[in-house]
Structures are given as structure tokens and as C-alpha cells.
Amino acid sequence: MSGAGKTEALRGLAARGHAIRDLDYDGYSVLRRAPDAPVGWEQLWDLPKVEALIDAHTSGALFLAGTVRNQGVLRDRFDAVVLLTAPRDVLLARVAARSDNPYGKDAAGRAQIEHDIDAVEPLLRRGASHVVPTDRPVGEVVADVERIATCAGGTGRKDGPRPTQP
Image 1 (cartoon, rainbow, N blue to C red):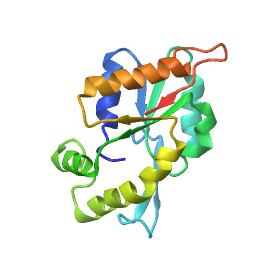
Image 2: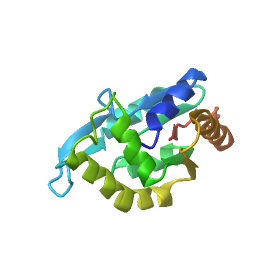
Image 3: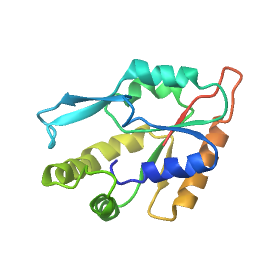
Image 4: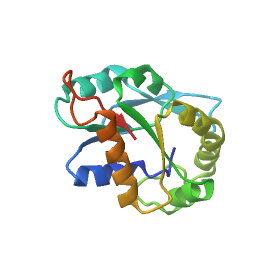
């Protein structure tokens, strides 16, 4: 969900020494035309590339962030799926205020965010193993996500660590 605090959570986790990856960037996602979407396109994970990233990670927790329609294909590869969420007004205010990402600044982007809040977030809630509210200090959010990963086994397994998806 745009504006939920994924980027800030990843920055906080990285500052604590964890491996992170925002799957919106670095070629881990592809854009596909979606005429029914308010913005006219949708983002999907490049599944072979994401699987290769997971397979290459061999120690400690790996925190992945992203929300796409095809993420469920890799669900069994994650120790935990964490939904970061905030009230609608907080999400929209964050998107309006941010300067490092133009998404959601125009009417079509805002309409897509509103659509996602109503139609996608309920699906994400059902698929999440944990829900973390982000309308509080980022340090608390990061500590909660880190605790979830530790309890879920994301700090190491005999068959190798599995990523946690905030």
C-alpha cells in the first residue's frame, strides 16, 4: 500500500544491519498494461528474479517489501508476511508530502491508492501473517517487524533463512 511506510521500515531495518530489498526497484518488478486500473498499468514481480534473490541469501534475515498481484505465488517462500498499514488519511497525507516518489501526486495515482485501500488492503489482511500499524514512530514499527522475523525463524534455519515480507 502506497504511503504505508515500507520504505521507512526498510531503512530502519537496514540501519539495524539487516539485508533488505524493495522489490519495486532494481528490476525486481515489471509494469504491465491494465486498462481497468485507474493508472492504466499494474506492477508485477519478476518471479524468477525474486526467487534468485531469495535463493542467493544464505544468512540472517532478509526483508523484502512490495505489494503486487502475483506475490502469492511465492508465499510459501516467506517465514512471515507482514502488512504495514495506516488509516486512509495518513496514507494519503504521506503520499502528498513525500518528495522522493511522484506516485500518487496526480488524480489517477490518488484514485489508484483509494481503490487499493478499498479493494486490495482487505485481501492483503487476509493473506498476512501479521498486521503492523504504521501511524506511530518508525522505530516502533521497525522493532515490531524485527520481532516478527525473529519469532518466525527469519534469523536462520537449517535449510537456509527465508525472507520476511513487510
